[in-house]
Image (cartoon, rainbow, N blue to C red; front, side, top):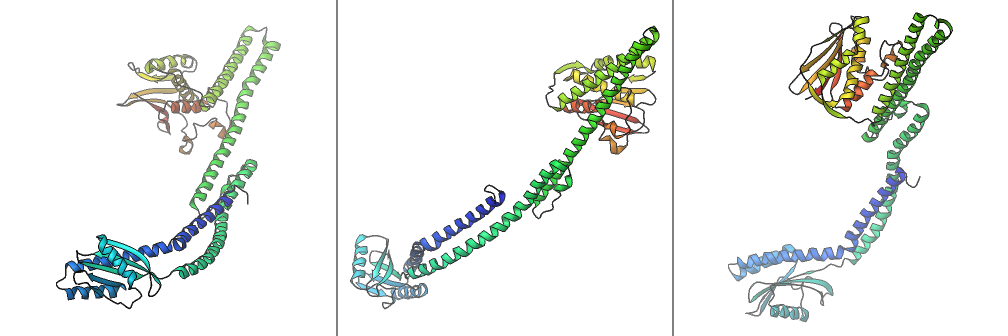
Length: 462
């Protein structure tokens, strides 16, 4: 396994986690067991002392108190001594028990506690009678009555030794199991990722998106697989668009260049003496040069927009005046080809936008309408709403199928059909329109039916 691979990292983390758990168990089960045992015994005697205190203050007579003491001692398994300093009498629940302290050691401690005037005290000492470690909890009930509850601390050294031996064995077994389980878990997690990595390398050579179809029990791996498959499809489509773009640009560049060369040779060799023919040929050369220039400009514009280098120059201007200016450029179509441009004149419509870019949007949409119009009638309409203006460019032509509407904004979408030389435009116009409108954050769209024709629209906020 590689040093920094996912498999190695998961394996290391799992083993480290197992070791940390074992260390904590070792500390709490072995190292801190005596302290925990002593603390538990102390709390147990504190509860006994509290019960005795409640019984004492609720007593009706001395015999009743002694009965309560005997009952509590029996239930808790402790030795209880009730000392009355006035009568100098000690009552012991079970003086022969290993729990009880007797002799001079206990007498010295009892005298010291009574003299100290403390309310309660705790002492761990060796019982000389049985030579066992004993815990004594002392409590002062009143000025003459004292209680001493004691319990033997069972030696747990042998228990700790047994636990230690057992824990060493458990540690070895747990570590072996952790090694095995972590290996298989790391392998289970890393294998699909390694497959996706290898698929990515293969995709660079074959461009086959099916390489990423990996079904896995982990939802995240499956999602990653689907994401890579989606990304690969997008890359493949981009590559296909790039090829189509190159093919179409090459075609659109080659056609005017061929015609320019052919007509230039015709002027040079044939029609240079015939003024009328020469003028016609030169006009064709100028028209094709304009078409070529328009294509190059559209390619440059689209390139700048897609590279995110284009910035908007927002200014206030009259949209109504801009439309009149644009329609003035189409007088030649009205005169020579009998096109009709229907536009209802509006009052001043002042908006905030990039005037030059919006002019290009309107120009491209009108060109597109001219190109696909059958009855040579183009309608431009502005409808004012409360929050925005709706701008529509309509024409009557062959309707666009519904399944193709979302694709017409793509570069050179016309290449999906038989390539035809457009009357106007370069095949990039709608793509430029889309980019500029999105740059302005304007909503846009298109509808197309046989009855109403094709309607391109976009909205400009007030």
